[in-house]
Length: 164
Image: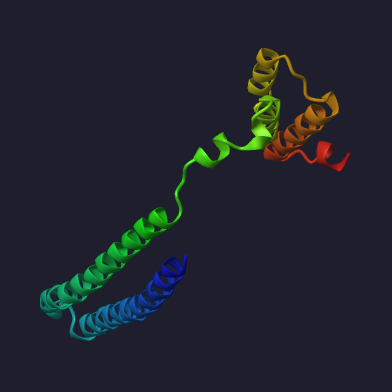
């Protein structure tokens, strides 16, 4: 865990450094554009081609530098993600031998059904519970149905049901 936190601190430092550098590059590009705009405004169309070439040649190394810093930072983020994946195993093997679920699957099925209800997937919850021979108290299901009806009404800019 300490390695993940240490790596995250390094990542934050690198991000702050890159932020300052890229913002500096953007400021330079803006300054060049403004300078070219002013020069074209004063010199007329004669300076247009010259300024366009100058802008292109001046902007290319700046944008390349910004892209390089972005790529380096992205690689650092990718490495941090791999470190997090190594530090935190995402398996459910610990739950398989758990005493809470050893005797009866009803707790798991009820938790899944309630989660479906919470998401508004009432038909899926009903199907799961019917196949398991279980029931959710009607008042729980009714309250969630009412909430989703209110949300749907609000999506249609109807606040009447929400104010009841």
